[in-house]
Structure formats: C-alpha cells, structure tokens
Image (tube, rainbow, N blue to C red; front, top):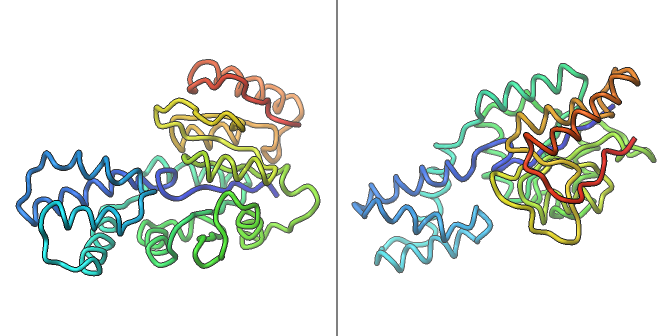
Length: 256
C-alpha cells in the first residue's frame, strides 16, 4: 500500500504564522513596539533556534522579570492557540486517502507540544499514524524514524516498501535528506526559496502542501492507475517541474 509521509511544522501546519501570532500577543501583553515583530521573526530561525535562546534573548532585550519557565509556558500556550490546519490541507489529505494512500506524520520536536498540535488541529482522524522524534529517540534524517512511521501506519517493512513511499517536507536537512538516505521519493516545499543543498536533491518541488500532494497522486506509484495513465502522469509532473513548480536544476526523474 502506498505511503505518504508528511512533516508537521510549515508543511501540514503553518507554524511560522502561528509563531508570529504569539509574538504579536507577547508584544501587546507587555506594551512593546509592534515593529519588534521583525526581531522575533529573525531570531526564531523558522523554529530551529532553541526556545531557550529565543526567550532568553527576549528576556534580556526587554528587561523582563519572568523566569524562562514562565516564558516557555506562555510561548507554548500562545503558539498552539494560533495553530490551525488550513482547509486546503485538509482537502489534500482527504484526496490522498480517497486515492488509497496511507498517511503518516514524521516530526522532529518535543513530544508534548507536537502531539498537542496534532490533536488540536484535528489531524488525528485524517492520518494513520505519527512519530515524534523525542518519544522515538531518533531524529530526521535518521532512516529509523521513517521506518518507525511506516510501521505505526500499518505498512510492513518489506524489501520494496521504500519504493511505494513519498516524503513531503519543507526543511531540506531533515525531510529531504532523510528521504534520500532512506530511499524514499520526496517533494520539497520551497516556500519561495531556492534550493541550496549541493549533495542531494528532492524528486520534485512544490509551492505548498496541496500542490505537493497533487504531484504525488499523479506520480507512477499512485494506486489503481493504468500503465498509460501512469506514464502521462509522470510526463505531466516533469512538465510541471519546468513551469508551475519552482525549478531545481538536475532533479532526478521519478523512478518506475
């Protein structure tokens, strides 16, 4: 059974938008200049800078008396209150499920906040399973985390399971490198960025999740497709890579 694995933050869920929502609340609560929203966006690093670094810097910048634990609790409550799964993403998941795909989430991060996001945004009934790095004891790009995800989704690790599996994500060093070393095909969500990794490349690139899912469903591993339809879908994906998708020189073709 074909398996579609999806990153959580900035793939399934618009995490950066939720962060800015929290940051605006923080500035408002402390009567700080709204222009400092740009400062928060810069130091956040798309969520890859440790929270202790971000919040510690904010504590010093504004001379706050609150403890880091207090600020961390405020942050976790705030960002998750702003997080939501866009309706277009929900529709894409329904389309994948209707086409016969098994769907899983593979997320790096702490178990409690990531699980809260999955539950709060209504993703639980839309996927077959998930794995979060803290509770799994391994991080993307380690192939083990993708194997755990497949097993939790009910996909047995047969010799050819990787040939029927795609990974979609926005963070190249974790999502796309992880797919590469595991043997999965991948779609990189470029979010308007150029590809910058010389050692590996995604199979395809897309502007957002709905487009990425559409590309996967059109690819040759789509269940129930006839041979001619599969060939046409592959050709269509290649054409899309030169037009509607942000082009990446040297993309490898979708394998049979």
